[in-house]
Amino acid sequence: MSLPLMEDVDLALALAVDVSASVDFDEFGLMVGGLASAFRDEGVRAAATAGPRGAVAVAVLFWSEAQDVAVPWMRISGPEEADALARALEAAPRQPRAAATAIGEALVAALALLARCPAQAPRLVVDVSGDGSSNRGRAPGPVRDLGVAAGAVINGLAVVNEEADLLAHYERDVIGGTGSFAMECASYDDFAEAIRRKLLREMRGAPLTA
Image: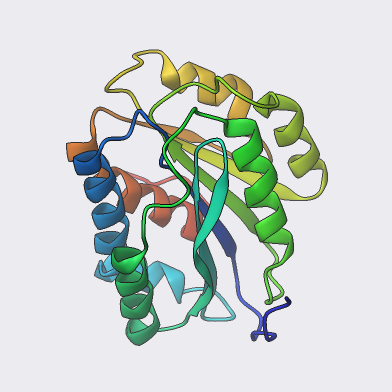
């Protein structure tokens, strides 16, 4: 079922969040809580509304071997909408069930979600966060290439508490597109700050400066 059309935005951002078996209950809470905290951050809110259209569109996908839209597309044009997104994140149930880490399948679902965004946007971004290499389903690299060819940018946040070389996997096989980037996060205790910085970089469309 198609969503009602939204006014144009500066960025359509699909957040793809790992809920596979490697993410335990506490880590899931830190991840979702970190995302909610980021959308309550004044800097993130300012970045979301700083473009010529004054808004971004955000949706959230939870993924493992299967995928589920945790938060449908929302237009963020001020603090009320950002608060509503934060509350929706905190209320989202952990679905689908914890299973293997299928990044390629997650990219397929995230790119399809991006294609269904009900707002026109000059920038289309998938933001993948997770703590493991792809170990089930189709390889992420070819899916990434198809997404880039269709005009999307794919960025990554690698939580390296279990796989020290995960960032290299993200850089090689997951991210792509003009200006794409991958960031490293040492553990879920650092997730809130890492995702805040990542959202700022994505919304601003340029690397952070010191």
